[in-house]
Image (cartoon, rainbow, N blue to C red):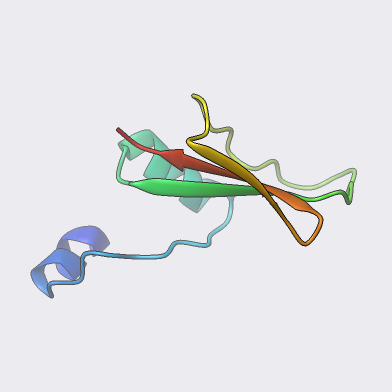
Length: 74
């Protein structure tokens, strides 16, 4: 519903930074074009797990000590 309303307003690019459940909905519904997974060196031990991306990243690079994996939904 939200994506349809944004499209009607001619908003075609949306940055989503949400919790695990929100991100999982976009992945399940395949309503995403690009995803960046940032992996740092800190280990929190507990908490809510992030959704798992499938496939091979289009691009992998380092930034400020983190590894960033960029995925494309084709």
